[in-house]
Length: 121
Image (cartoon, rainbow, N blue to C red; front, side):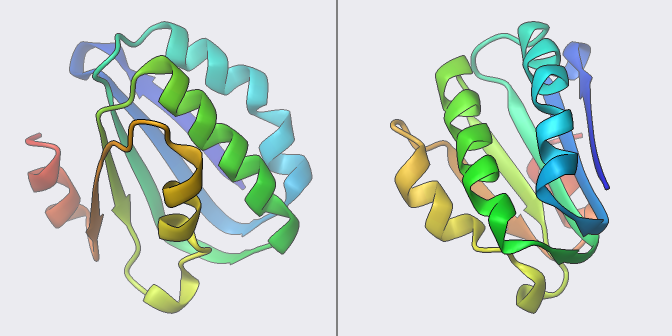
């Protein structure tokens, strides 16, 4: 499952990856992601939570790359990733190198406590 929410008051987009994530799930939320981004100003922050991810289908990677490009176009400044188990990282650092024209600051955290500190929340 993929859940995207935003908090415009904190200029924060939250992306949650839960259980098994497949391409159809990500594609269903493409329009929702754009709507959420419309409420955020350039310089916004992203919290990408992979702590509940069990598995991600490899065919999701191009869709995630496209999401990164949309985030880049709309002015993301900081990406905080919660990835407690590095073996479950679907390759976010590699994708980041190729899909952000102006790379945002990226912080990898092993838990939510670290992530909230990195976001100054």
